[in-house]
Length: 83
Image (cartoon, rainbow, N blue to C red; front, top):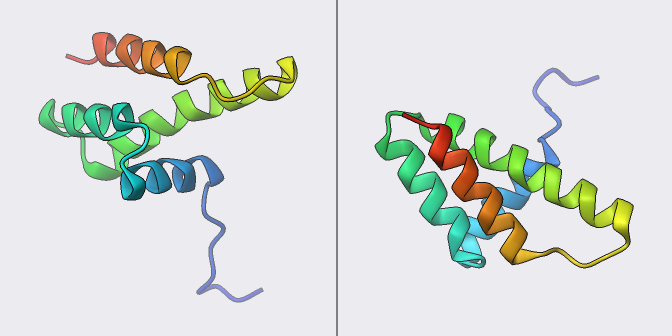
């Protein structure tokens, strides 16, 4: 295996895609707020990625579409726990 290649966390990729497209805007707002609270950009994206992961797991287990309202609420909950 080539040591130069790494496997990127697929949830971080979703966060990167959200940031690049601006949709949903809650992702950028959350990342920006986390950075403003002292998190590095990488840490901020990792924290948001945990919310993406949880929503995607719920989505798949329930057989439903991605719920932007639930995602936004979960991001707000995450941000409320940050100092």
